[in-house]
Image (tube, rainbow, N blue to C red; front, side, top):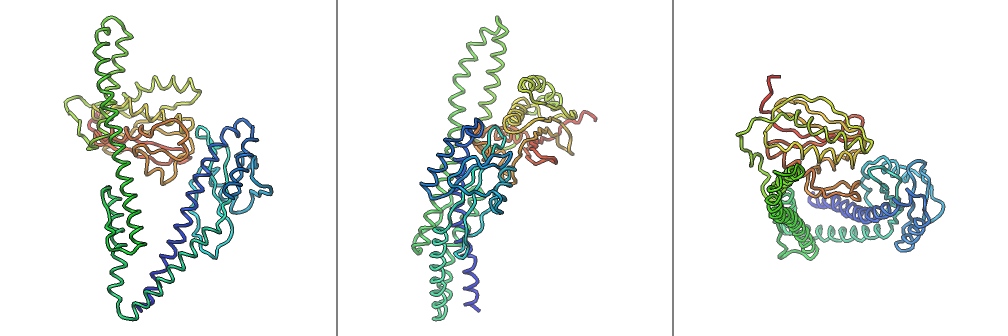
Length: 447
């Protein structure tokens, strides 16, 4: 029975070796495909594909990996490193269907030694949120399958040794010795997912393979910790450095504000910049909801504040020949310190840059919450990306080539949390993306 359990335990380890190798190869070639897609953007727009053909040939010669680029309209191969490309092959057609539709790529199958064929990796060529075509790599898998075979042979050897140890009566010590570092890694992984980025695992007295695995885990955890710390330091330093020149500028302009209406407008903008600096400071520090609430001012009618801000945005959208639809505007009192102008500016700016018209804005009620909704009709986001909306410095893979910092929605989320609210991103019926800012209702105006 114990021997049977040992054999059964080896099955998920074998699957892990094959899956991990497949995922590593897929991610590596996905980065290459993203680069080729970025290089193909300009040729697909201009129609000058000679340089693109040369690029695909050079890549094939360097990495022994065939590559071709297709346009989105007719799935016509516009550049290829070798002749005879058939875009109707089932695996290629499936990858193109997913990529040209803007969906996330499927997880590649595990590369077991008995599998044959190439791995197809496709990435969209995107310009301003519009898919122009796709870059497709046909990745050879022989070397990767050889690596998996070597790993499986090592696993088999380890399994035979374990069975031998069981036979001679040392089952419990071997089991404890083998499973302890794996349990430590499992516990440490759970701690990191809960936000404890300073978690480390001990590598003393481990087998060489497990010691290397532990060292790699510790290096990964250290990198995550340092990256988070650098983010906080960057935001804190930026807010600190901006505060002094803003104060100085305000002092100088205050003297002119009695004489010039333009100076008064400039003074108003400086005050707004000062509020932005304060929010940056909050991003660098605590995200505790309600930390800055004063509670002495009258509630703010969110619908009225949104309607006033939309007056300027309607002109901006009209200048860009984009349709802005104003939906329901249901009155509802919210915390007066909520920065409605800044929240709406971020949401409408993102919708115009990353989405597609028409863009719809509404203010509604949902139980004890007032909901500000902004919807666009663009490609939207995948289920994994929806969970990351509002994270600091995060940007969708489809929009990394476009201008932006990844801080806009993080500030919106922090601003909503400051008054006890939240930000929700969801895919609406009919496609696109809806961003909802939900804040507590504190005055219903007897509606």
